[in-house]
Image 1: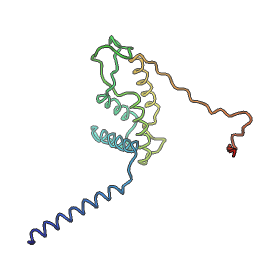
Image 2 (image 1 turned 60 degrees about the horizontal axis):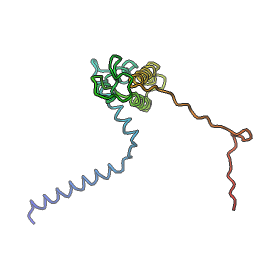
Image 3 (image 1 turned 90 degrees about the vertical axis):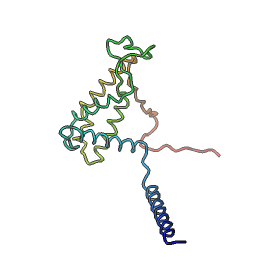
Length: 183
């Protein structure tokens, strides 16, 4: 075997072991859940949105108006048809034909997004008291989006009632219940 061939084989071997090492390192990194991956992606997207503002805004300078602008910006990428008041299909859950009404982000998507960004903000050192994603104006905006979309589709939004845990009168809730097994 010539010196050139040995060098080539050696180089291939070292690159192979390097890629094997890289794969080993990647496999030892914790695998993120779908929620954690989405939260990280959302946080990075929001951070990029702030950097693209003129002038750029840091996360520490961000307030609820930046968040509202971000939510409105996202509407252009939405897939939910929201019929306008004058549209023939306004209030129809399943319109029979296409129309020119805009596509928007669905309320549920925005609500979930805000939940993830609210958590990410605090994980990145922000305090709950200054969290712009938890502000009252964000909750009002989301409520308005939900109501508007429900009206436009003719589907009234009804809040689901929480089920109450019923405690039997002769049970003490502070004591754990024990199961008796018959043999």
